Length: 501
Image (cartoon, rainbow, N blue to C red; front, top):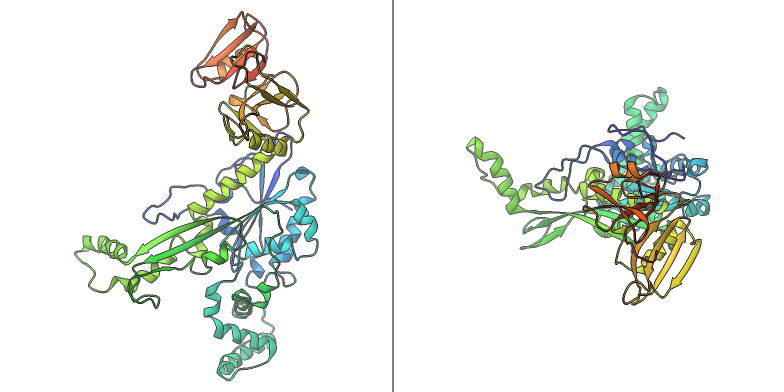
């Protein structure tokens, strides 16, 4: 199984500190293809603005340290309901199972980002599909965009054609559908008679029939949707939706008088795409007939023209813009949310220490949250020590020290959840995936550290017997060596120096 081709000039993948990678799987939707992920982000819910984003979502994900990205391709069967043999569900489970069998992903869970029907496929793979339990144990995060969990309301609008497709399958013909059904049968018979199944018109006809049958499955309350299980309890899922909200719609959309209509993404409603009570985010595009008037007149004025007809007649075209269903993979609101969520997920396999934070927990933040995050990323501490505090500080404050190899994180356990005090790194082995400011570690020479740290100054401290490096740009930080002449390597790094350390 080969990862997606690198795009947007992104270089080769960079592994986590443990030498492994986190696999990210992108799943397209109904009548779509993997090409949606490699298109640059060109839309924003702030409809007056055009985002200046040169990279695609695929390129941005490929640039994340530790990530290898795969795109599932079932476009040949993307007009079929995904649980059918050989359709999207089978393709996805094959890709997922191949990936989780690779040694380079050992210990790293799969991250899935899926659009439209792709979200139903991802959920089905860990609930109702053969081998679901094993996949459930290896899916770390699922992000779905515009997924019709409760159906797509647009599917109901094609009920006549859907019923016609169902008639073809069952042989039960309604009188009003008979002419269309007869025409389809004749066309299909011609394809079989002349053995031209590969001929474009015949292939297209089969796709149309598959499409119509699948539309029935997407209808709210359909047997196909009703048979699907919800996401497993405890699984980390984020649902994203788009919503075109049209204001001042008197006389439009069967609304009498002033009012507002929420069209969802025009294909899938807001409630359907965010169903399940998971963490959700909705990108909202708001339109008004007054804004439409301004837009059109601004375009016409250079030509000496203005609208002389009711602009409300044109407002129906606007929701087919930024928040339209097929544009969700290139909508800045969603691509940013996906990128942020996956970047945070990758941090579970590495830990960044900064002047003002340990991972995502800021200094001064909850000590309980910091300890929980650290145990999740690094596992159980090698050592835990509780202290009444440093006697050289007045008044002394209790401390809780959690150590993983050469890394020690200091907490103040008092006051409810306590607080995060800071971190320090001494000589010895640090946990895999640990990232330190400016890349300076205890393997870095003092002279190299002086060149690397912006604005670094150094002096020998007679009181504590160390060669201390500091910078005004990061006053919290201190790096130290053991030799008075500044030779040798860095032996101690901290963002909160306490005299008793």
